[in-house]
Length: 199
Length: 248
Image (tube, rainbow over all chains, first blue to last red; front, side, top):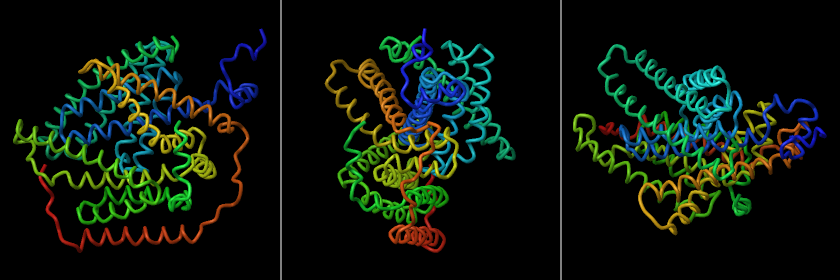
C-alpha cells in the first residue's frame, strides 16, 4: 500500500510534516489547538464554579475538582501522547497569569504534579488504556494537592492550627476528584458511542 | 465557529490598538488587581476597564456579561450565607465581603473581552510567533485567549437546546447540557485546528508579518492613560479612604 494511503486524514500542514519525517515526534497543530481549547475551558469553568461557591464552600470545591479531572481525562483521550497534561497545566497557568494575575505560586507545583502523573501513565504502559489515563490524572491531582499543602505548611508552620481547616477542605475536594474520575470514564463511553473518540 | 465574531471587532476603538499594548494592558491590569485590595481602587479600575471593553464589544454583550457576573455574585452570597448559618465559626456572612473578589473578576472579564473580541486570532498568533516563543506555547496560548467568546456562545446555544428537551434533574443536565457541551468543544477544537492548518500554522514555513507594525498615537495614548489609571488606583489604595477588610 502506498505510504500516503496509510496516513489518517491529513491536511497539507500535517502531510508536509510527515513527509519531512518529523510528524511523529513534533506536536501537530490539531493537538496544540485541542490543548489550548481544553486549557481555556478548564480555567474558565473552574474559576466560575469556585467564585460561585463564595469562598470556602466544600460543595463547589468538590465540583471544581470534579470538572478539572473530567476534562483532563477527556483531553488525554483526545491527545494521547506524553507531555499533553503538563502542557495543558502550563498553558492554564499562563492564561491565569496573563488574564487573572494569579498562578505564579501554584504553577510550579502543578507542573511538577502533572509530570508525576505523566510518568505514572508511561510506567503503566502508555495512553492506550483508560485505566492508565485515569490513574495518571488522579496521581497528578492528588500530588498537586499534597504539594500545595506542603507549601502551606512551609509558610504557616508557626501556626499549625490554621492548616487543619485547609486539610479538611482538601480532603473534601479529593472526593470531587474521585467523582471526576468516574464522570470522565462515563464521558469516554459517551464519546466512543458517538464515534468522536476511537478505541 | 461563529462568523459574527469576525464582524464584531471591525471598526471598534479597541481593534485599532496594537496587540502588544493590549497584552500589556491585560497583564498589568490583572497583576495590579490582585495586588490591590481597596474597593475604591478596584472600582476605579473596573470602570476604566469597562470603557476599554465598551470600545471592543456592543453594550448589549457587555450588559449580558455583567448580568452573568451579578448572578454569580448572588450565588456566592447565597452559598456563603448558608455556610455561615451551618458553621458560624468558619464564616461570618457579610453582604460586602465579596465585593473585592467581584471587582477583581470584573476587571479580568473586561480586559479579556477587550482582548478577545477586538483581536483577530491571526494577529495575536503572528505577534506571539514574532516573539520567538516555541510553537507549543504560542499556538495553545493564542487559541486559549481567542476561544473564550466561542465557548460562551456554545454554552448559550446548548443551554437553549437543553430547555427544549423533556425531563428534569441530573439526567437532563447530563444528557442535555454536559455531554453536548463536551461534544461541541471537541468539534470546535477540530474546526479551529482545520482552519489553523489550512493557514499553514505549525508548518515549517514561518509566517511573516505583512508589514512592520509600528506603534501609533492611539497606542501611545492608551498606554499613557493605562499608566495614569494604574498609578491613580495605587494612590487611592494608600492615600484614599481606608476600608477595613470585611470578615469572611
